[in-house]
Length: 568
Image (cartoon, rainbow, N blue to C red; front, side, top):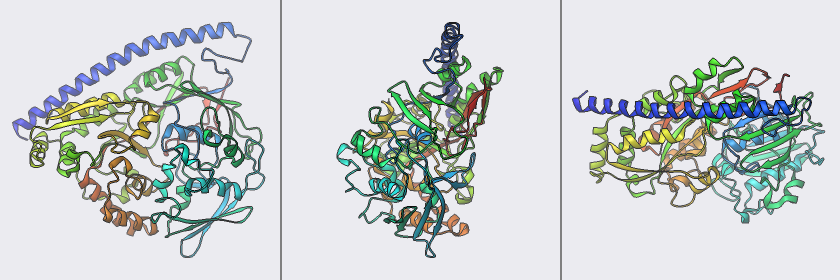
């Protein structure tokens, strides 16, 4: 390494030490103060309610299971969200046609008891469970399933309420497009009888059952949707499914309260009479309130909180298997970023490995591939990471016509997510590296729901942090929602015909050997293009009080809480 290279590396480590010191000093002081307040509130509550089980200091029933969510859901309308905060709540209210075995990506029956494909792989038929009712007492059957899928798939469906701004983005990301659009994978949805739903596809898709098993596609009550109309899924409109818990209340900015479904079709579930889901965006606050007994379990804590967790005898930590990606998106509709050399310069300018080591420690890895190592069979074995080289970055910027750099808005998330538990300091680390090569960064953020929505409004954010936790155990769950047909609105509708061809081929083929070659080429194309620069594949840090039993974290990032119970 040249002397200049050593100097840049030493400067980078110095910057990281400063970030780490500031972050830890702030967190330690804030956590201590918050813990004291929460502990006091808990003691006051216990003193005044010794003979009552109605409320604790948080205003939650003391017998309730209390979950610390990292943020508020965008909405509770199935099929009309893409964010994990919404999925985690929807997983409690809705069932899907197919579920996942606890702690795995393996499929198991849910509202559908069995499913089969035609010989050509273009028709899928699902047999439905009988005797199931929605929370409002109406019947679950094939017509109800078709009602849900039609409103996601068919733009002309009168109950889609698209005139109210509903987009069903996840449907297009997963299945290519809406009815009558050339890219639509789904060509027909029919009801052969009351207990059967059938899908006709444009081409074979071996992972189709896995795709519709993802947490986005819960089955809602048609009666409830018609009654609430465009307000369905909002605090005022509520949500009605067949799941283990019934929607009771959504206090915006504070919590969602769910009650036990007394008629749940799974015997002896759920284990808890009430589930309270509180919105606490800061990881230090979540841990402090959990230690004080205000929460029973929570997710997505910062890796540097692990030592503190281990010192508390009343709580225990675990981690999810890594099945996610945290990335920095570079929008090519912004002129400097339209040149691939500029995007590659950014990849060289950011010391990705050092940032991952500093913010995640051994709870993550940096990889040149967009998909995690869990799916290593689909990665390009010859792919090399972009080396940290400010000199190379400056050379590429000069070649692209930006020898003095340029101005760049970088948006970071306002909430912690499994892949980015502390978004702001991580964004600051990106900014420090980019400024060293002349890219003048302005950091920006906004409310989570607006962040998700506004990145799609043309021309979109210039650059932004986001990520993804896989929805089923296949490379398709990472690639198609980010690079397939209809999924690049946040990248100025960027398109690569060869890439689209490969993604469609990967879906149609069932043979893993053939698919591995296809996805290896996908890997190489995306590495070259640097549109969503993969920064991290993390192992999210979770924690619970030792009074909690039955929590089995899913690699998919969220799971039903139906089997969790709290010992007295």
